[in-house]
Figure (cartoon, rainbow, N blue to C red):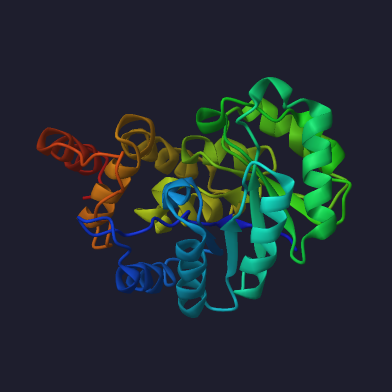
Length: 295
């Protein structure tokens, strides 16, 4: 399986009491289906998966699958701290229609997460998983960075098909691509700020939070690059920078959801301990998207 294109890491809509609004999840997916995307990441960081119990996770996967066409890949986040728990959840989400298991680096015992520990963890999961595995490197949340050498070794396993690298480090991504270019291995950026430069070094696309708000803009950057319209792709990339910062590092998932509301999606509330954004922050988000020419 070769993963290419745009994959929104869909959010989980909650009401003000923290209950999942499955109808709004369905409506968001149905709207995104027409935006030129290649698939979805369900239960990723943007989906607040760390706040969900297993029953809720499976209900979300089941609901999402009903709205995601078979022509689009459904990637599902399953990474837990232990091999046993990750394998168990992987098998369950496979039964619910997941196409790919996205496995974040275990990170609670940071000091022990060596190259060899990562190899053992991921190889055992890949051996047992009934569906392909996508590595997920996101240092901003885990405090750990999976090195290119580790990724390259793991890429030799037939059931490990790629990586979502959210480090934002184009140099590291280029090294990963260089070390895996002889494999059927998909390298996807997790940062829309570097989508265009990532395409220039051989990435297949991205799994990016801003794609929950501006999926077509992400799709356009990729297509412009493929069509040789480099100046246009770079210009659109530059316009995406401030909106991306607003819905990631500056205002986080509550900010992402607020931006979704502005564009006709159902963002809604987040679960505590994530707090609602202030009126001042909402005004700032609106101004940022307006100044960038998206509103």
